[in-house]
Image 1 (cartoon, rainbow, N blue to C red):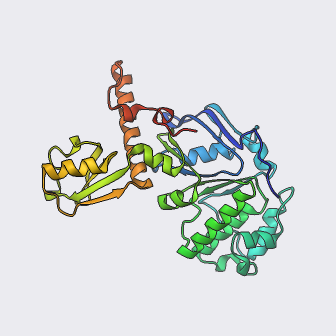
Image 2 (cartoon, one colour):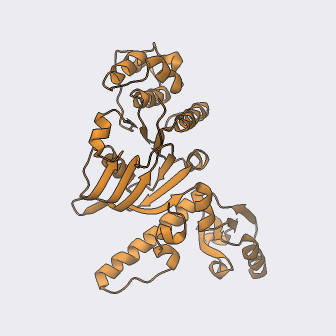
Image 3 (cartoon, rainbow, N blue to C red):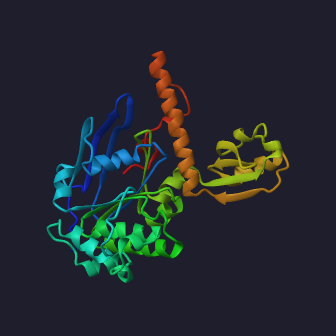
Length: 334
């Protein structure tokens, strides 16, 4: 089935808040996802990813604000077979074959895909007659993906989908994802493999402490946080005096016995660095998504700490503008 793109968002968070006692897991989240998008949801452990997914699937209710799927309550979309989910705590039933499992799950949906098509899409046609308990961890992961596909959903929500997969299986998985979004399906996946998000998502959403900190294409996000890295050997494992103030430098740190300078102007930074000291092992590279992720989550933590200090003292927070700017102000919110 090919999904028709429409004006109604597939997913819409509107000021969504979720509290667990004194802990705020989701903090005023505003997001929309459209048909045919392949979205990576990124964040540190405890950032609010799993809670956001639970709200999206109707497994939990927001404390404030709303979460809608296809313009209505998430439970309606889930019960109507429009949503498929691949969660980390999947426990397949024993003593049945993979094909029987897919057929059984599909029978709960109003218009399931044929079992043979599901197996083919998931890249496990050769496992259809195999008993589930005889499968390896990577094979079970692909069966979990097949289960999510069985109802022919318009929205696929995948939590760490490539965990336990080998390189070839990952490549096959992402080919399947591209085929699905080409048909108008929406795919939302969370992952700790940032290189996979960089290569396979056409949109990246980063959250930290339950707040949106970045939303845009990978190139947009990397361009916004700085265009390059200047790295060199750290003498005695310390940050040399003056390097943080060099032209273009946004952040400076020591990581694994290397000084790492994130900079908006690698050429100017390098020229000034060589004039300041004699660096060994000097390298200049393009900043990747991992560097962007580290920068943004670090800035978000600084901003959160400043905000909490302001609330405690009753005075306005002070700090670098880049740390307190909203995603819209930084230029990469959709």
